Amino acid sequence: MEQIPDEELEDAVVTLDALHAQREHARYLVEERGAHYLLSVKGNQKNLARQLKSLPWKQIPVLHRTSERGHGRGEIRELQVASVNGLLFHHARQVVRIRRRRRLLGAKKWSEEVVYAVTDLPAEQASPEEIATWARGHWTIENSVHRVRDVIFGEDARTIRTRNTPAVMAVLGDIVRGTLRTLGWVNAASARRAHTNPATVLRLHGIT
Image 1 (cartoon, rainbow, N blue to C red):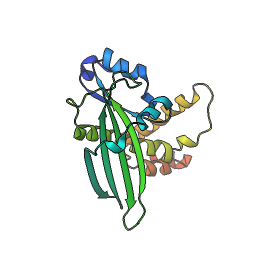
Image 2 (cartoon, one colour; image 1 turned 120 degrees about the vertical axis):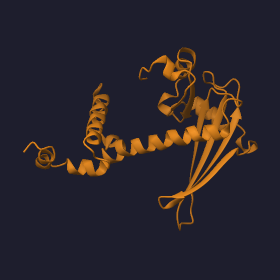
Image 3 (cartoon, one colour; image 1 turned 180 degrees about the horizontal axis):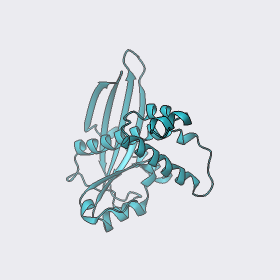
Image 4 (cartoon, rainbow, N blue to C red; image 1 turned 60 degrees about the horizontal axis):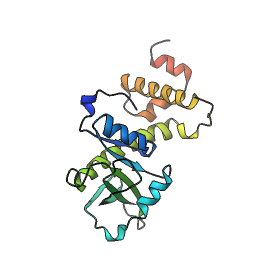
């Protein structure tokens, strides 16, 4: 985790994806930095994911619901929250289940995704509306960043697995994307297409 001054993290709510659903990360945030967390949980934590899915969700009411239209599709989000004790995770006080249903406008069939998360904040400190806002904000950023990295720059398709090479390549990719933004490129796909021909790249940057 990137080192951030203590005063900037104290009492802050840190939202993290499933990669960071580690007990040590949760302990570090709460005990050493005085922060709070909202962590996504997926298959990389099999026992925890199994425990979350086994909760009696059919008996737990939907506490927050949103319905939106945009970008040629409709989306419905339903959020359920359960207070917990004895969960297989450091400091966990609430479990979150978010059901997302999407449908292209004019289509009949809905696609559905169910995601889970845990937070150390008890019900009196984190309402369903607040949790929904944190989760939405995190996944909006995550989805936009991951699309650029995985789809436009093809990171998922790489077959390099030797030692630290994947991490080095990821850092180089971040440097390239940051440079393109600094140069004024708003659309990552257009920027990438403009930099596929060596001669064109030299002209773009006034080198020839």
